[in-house]
Image (cartoon, rainbow over all chains, first blue to last red; front, side, top):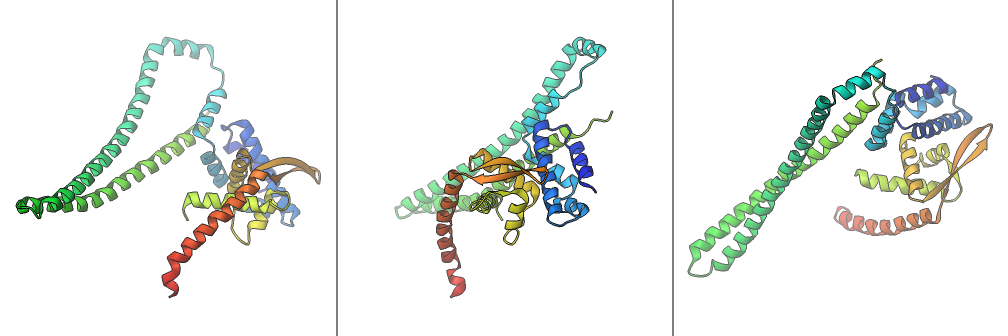
Length: 199
Length: 104
């Protein structure tokens, strides 16, 4: 692949990203290739050393914040035809509530996901406090005439302590899972936004 | 390696690569190569981050009929390297403590 082909291919992959940002990056890669050629590599080798177009495009899409991509997407939308505008306005009572509902449902799902995580941690916190108070109170009365009650309390406290360790592992795994899921969703949206629309 | 830790380390590595004289992208990668492999894409992200943090400045210079960007470290960047050295002394002493038993 020649340098020109490489830059053109990369530019094509990034056509929906902010123009200035893309230009700056393309210049950076061009400079890298030219410096390698100057260093004695052939053009072919220099291009190969920089990496594949797909890899680089993927890295760049991950690197640019979602908000920037979304704004660019809205800015570069083509002008609407008259009949499209008429349809848009005529259909407004239908599509606006539908769109709002759509995003509201997604938001609600996401919020409830985090609520589950928060409640899991709340359960964890209460089990920990049970363990602490059980052990402290049990130890306090185990040497009094109320010996049996003290032993029972101690037992409950120790069981809760064991339970809390398991719960902690579970809570942590669930939290990590949601964080990873969020990253995946953001990357998916970015990818969709930057995909070329079929003409 | 932990991602946050690696990011911090790479930032300091790039600062060190431009500490003694201004440098450009390909030279930075080449200078670092014996110590740590760095891809172009990663380097771009780091340079941008350091520029925003005012740890380096960029200027464009004509070179053999084309343009090349040179990066120069700022006082803030030099300060960051010094901070890193001090932090690392602490980490090294922790490391020695952790591996003490292995040696015995």
